[in-house]
Amino acid sequence: MALVARGKTDWEISQILGIGQETAIQHVKDARDRYGVTKRTLWAIRALFDGQISFADVFGR
Image (cartoon, rainbow, N blue to C red; front, side, top):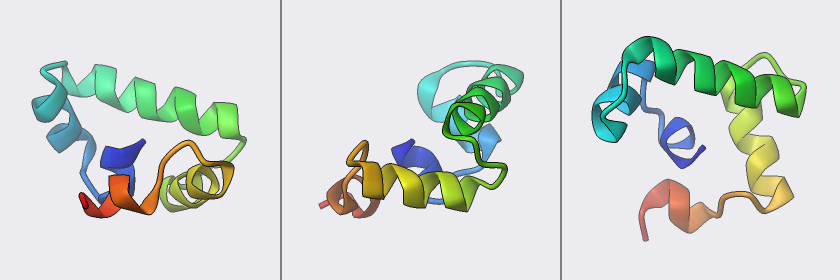
């Protein structure tokens, strides 16, 4: 979640986590589906409001 909130692409997420790009795409899609949203930005905002991530996670402080 934090990587998406930081604006990382699926490819960048796959490289950071050491997984395949298609796996990263599927994980992000599954997580968006669980939140009931279609956009990555909305998912990040909802995660912030739900307390799943913090502004420190997003901005790396």
